[in-house]
Image (tube, rainbow, N blue to C red; front, side, top):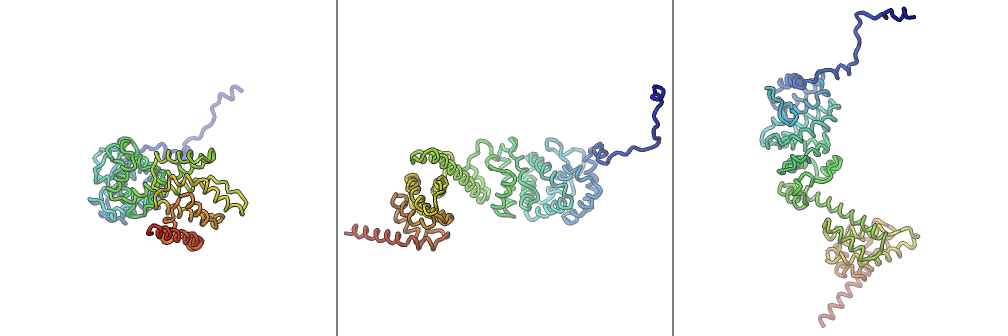
Length: 424
């Protein structure tokens, strides 16, 4: 056995061991400068501003160049005109700027011209779908964190292009997280870049469309793009109005109101579960208002909804109306505390109107609820009369106006009687 084991095993001579293609690529030297030079050879043949020609050449080049391997280099070349080193400076090897780059657009930047550049990216990523992920997750975030390296004109071009990419659904807003880095926040750089992005976006889409894009990108609070000493809602409002973006300022204010209203409604539900005491409820609301002020109409809406959400409506159908009247009477002191002016009183009536319209179980109880609110001084006779004459909401308007005719007529007669007594 020992002699057999000493005999060398036969081996094949002249046979080439096959290596997997992926392994060969992994072992290949990463040479972005070589890739750049090869890409330039394709782009240099296209006349300036021939966007269709650039699109065709990029698609053609994708057949021979390794776009996926050099995705970062590809988008650096097409977006900012050259290869970027760690730290944000251009690779200094004597190479010229790219024949195609958004930095080649004229000054000052023009939205319509930049749309033509964006269309080239659209066609490229649609043809090579595997480029979309590195474009969104690597290239755009990296370039944004270096955006302070370029001139103000170049920053505007890049920011406006990104805004158009967002508006056309070619990238998500998640890359904006790069702008919250400390070195960009200082000196208002981040927020000015954001304003340019929003300006380009809103030239193409609505504020609601922008809000949805920011939500999908998990951009929750615009104040994070301001320096820490300027993170105040009033500063934000003034900034966007100065930048001629009042819709952004209004949207942010409404968003903050919605957050505050939700907080009040949650707080009310918890407080009512612990105690029905009106003073405790009023104190809890005032505590929340110290964190975020609300317009009176918005506040009274959140209070009504929060109080009604705390009610156990599991009674028999024939007892629902009576339950509603008892609960409104019980919570009347809370409503009185925050329902002082005539506009707020009319707002409360409209809130109750819409609530009764949405919940058909208490629809018939609306006139009685209105009477309880009047008797408990939550709303005045003038507020009810004004609401009936021209202040009502469209939801169920004819039904509610007819149902309250008797109460309104009584209040009008009472008002006339008091005027006659005053004259005497």
